[in-house]
Image (cartoon, rainbow, N blue to C red; front, side, top):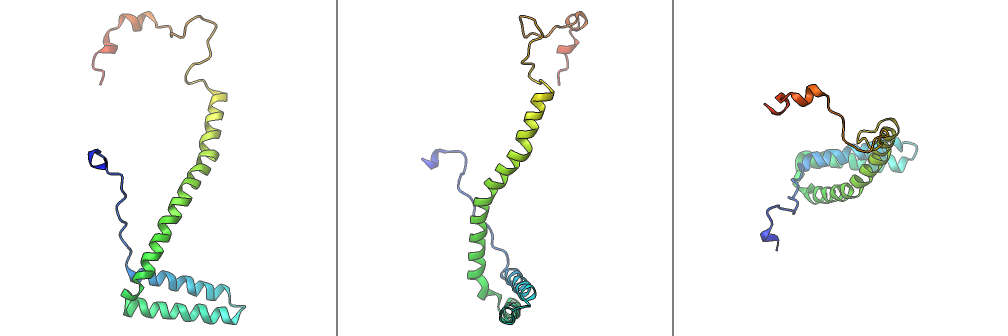
Length: 139
């Protein structure tokens, strides 16, 4: 059945970032862990040691980090599938709904409230009615 559809609904495979940059990002995170955990000597040793090891691996043999890179991208795709709808819901609830409610209180853009007349038609002035220029050069 999917061969009969015009649209392609399968998502293309995301290109992986370079292994070197992934290794350097993980090295920066390990260095941050070592810095912020400086009150614990074991945490400093593990964090700084892994940061140095990741920097050395990133610049000498970055292809070793390919499985980590693939795993990290899969985790990123999973996070985007979870957090994108949540962020859109929060944005809708905080921005769109209050703006719509405020607009309904202040304005009536659809002119749903009648002005006492029996019709929803808007009165047209005689100048607009006699003028046929409104139908010429519409675009």
